[in-house]
Length: 428
Picture 1 (cartoon, one colour):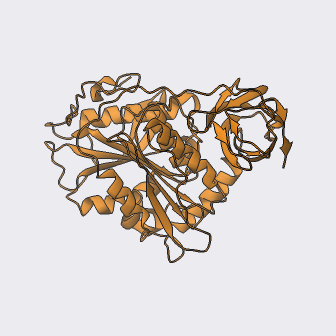
Picture 2 (tube, rainbow, N blue to C red; picture 1 turned 180 degrees about the vertical axis):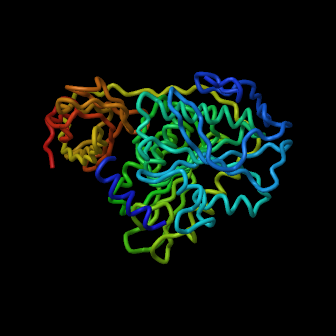
Picture 3 (cartoon, rainbow, N blue to C red; picture 1 turned 60 degrees about the vertical axis):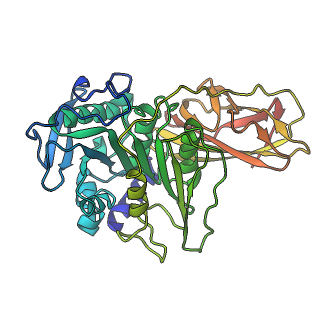
């Protein structure tokens, strides 16, 4: 497994319908679910698929995936479904086989735990184009839609027990699923992820578990915090800055957010380590990691029902004019034709800022495709980032970090010419 991660780190650093059969509506809603476990059309029928590698036509492409049925599959039993996404440079076979750690790390260690707990899970590993999950034009989301529909028509699955998870680029794809298919999937697990595959929607609640190393030098932990905070907000959790371990402590800290809507938990697990899905507190990484147990505990907490969903609206505060002294620093992580940027805003004035907007200039050829901890308008040229409902204030001497993902045509430079509430900021 370590060999696969070293290949991944290098790759990421250099790059960073057939819906009705499974009860999926085009908008991502699950048709016919009324709060009780819902069987797919494949229940009660001989299985139309077997374990192994398969192909499916999706969006005019032949896409491949590996299916892993539990031992002694029973077509009258409604199974949990876990979709495991590989990392950049990885493959579906790496996820299914467990790589160098074999069966013990198959599907991030969850297959072993499922087999030990009455074999209640169907596992599937899709293969990304170019061994990644760029999701251009939503093609990877459509692949997931088509795959879930096919599995539902061929096998017996509980539609209230569909989950997804993945590492790095696979974590980005899991986040994209959480944003766009919150009414199809019950929860996601994101290992060291970032917004790499887009976020179409991103306003509905879904169970969310995030793992991230404090010393991750491929996708910094700030990117993972940004993903987490999307669902802290969507799930109605009480905002907080959860404790994280210090460098050299060789420990991890798991925080379950309070105040979340019933049935929509958010869990954040930070560890003293780098870019890996399998840290070991005593040092190194491998299948003996604690992450598989935490993920299994998280996924198996959900009962076979769907919480009642209501629509929530995120509002922004219109910032008043004022003497907002400020300093801004930026950190950009770029790949072939995309980038992410974290922007840290420090209030260097003597009084708090209550409601803020940060104006800046985006380099030519860059277009913002999504963001976190702020709203962005327009998406190119002269851009203004405005606070969201949970971060309108910046105390004197305090800092907040916001960020965005963008495409570029060759110029991956950081934004420039920052002003906070109309006042020019220093940089650095």
